[in-house]
Length: 88
Image 1: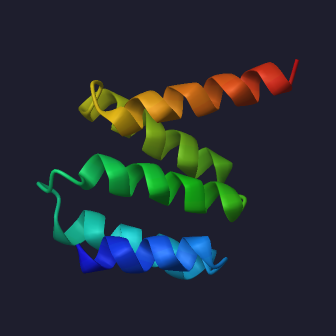
Image 2: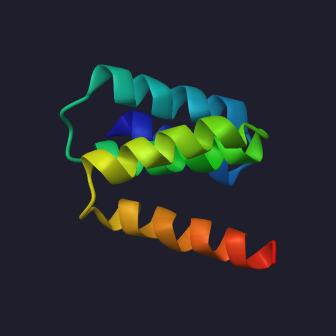
């Protein structure tokens, strides 16, 4: 829980690398956590802000495959749809 809170705080305050690090640590340390979809989603947000779009896409595809009914999986679908529409 604390890793997620610290990650959110770093992300909110613009410390994207630190946020990504905390989300990544959470994912590695707690792979069975019910908060894993949330960590994957926010790590994707951090990666996007760092310009790592390909890594974000791989991560979010993994999120959608492993947790298709997750609220965060549905959020990735909405964000990806918005981005594809804005490119038109």
